[in-house]
Length: 375
Ligand SMILES: Nc1nc2c(ncn2[C@@H]2O[C@H](COP(=O)(O)OP(=O)(O)OP(=O)(O)O)[C@@H](O)[C@H]2O)c(=O)[nH]1
Ligand SMILES: [Mg+2]
Image (cartoon, rainbow, N blue to C red):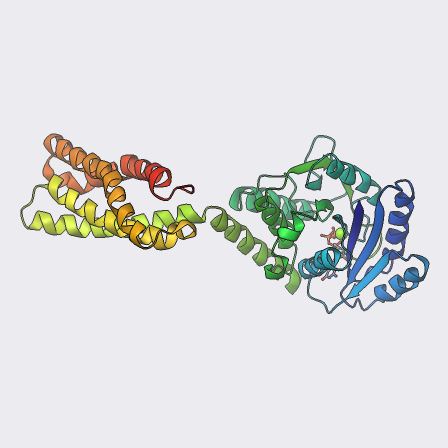
């Protein structure tokens, strides 16, 4: 198993040498793994890359990528791509240069990969995990992004710790399936985004408890500056986009239904104005909505299984047959409701029947009978 350790650096002259030595040293205890170290440095003004160049003379498995300052996310994207394409690794293990995540823990991650997991995350949120020396500001910052945004807004539930850099990822079939070139994250939102993209590849996730501590040497890149504000907004945006992507079909389905509802209300209102009984007016409105729903869902919601040509006509009739159920539900609900409450309540009755009966009924039926995957 070839492991590529990826270390992004920006002004880490105090740490990078020790980190390289630490990884090399642990590697000696595990000769079955071939280790490569890839430092991705954003032209650090403190001369970090010069130190790496010196170490390169000592260690032939050490590689250096230098690029202009673009943020942690971009550095990791470049590093992952390089590990896949140039270094042809089996596994990547990114870590920070500052020893907040102990490199001695990397065999724990690698062993889990050997056990059959595809993504193994070093975690601060398991029994046995420890966080040493974080102040209230860092805790608050982490908890908001981790619990509220990553877990709740984005809905990424594969792991409990979404923000750390230290993890092991299997390349073949998983990391190489992630569209790294399309990912735009400049900052730490990359950590959440990559977990989400990996979840879409069907990867099996594991988390291992570790001890996380304050950096001892060098300066943190986190602090109130324009990068920090940019990264926070990017994290919020990323969380929302993940949620939309995860539930895209449902969002589209709701929107199409909303358009159908407006059409139905207008047609029913016209019918009632021309002295139709509310149940019949609602039924005609419902049929109009059903036609609109069919075409919009076909070209948009279920575009990945779009129906075309002669099959479209056949499906349209099938669709009407299935939807007939929802017309009957609404018509009868409005008819019986009008008897009890009066026909002036037709609109309220129609809404109740749509929300509680028609929407669940038709979402199930459309998926089951109309836009089913296998035919
Ligand atoms: N290449 C590159 N590396 C970066 C950049 N920003 C941060 N890093 C590196 O990414 C790792 C994590 O950054 P840190 O500044 O330690 O961020 P942090 O761990 O969230 O913050 P602290 O807890 O304060 O240390 C370190 O190795 C940094 O040198 C960047 O813009 N480019
Ligand atoms: Mg750090």
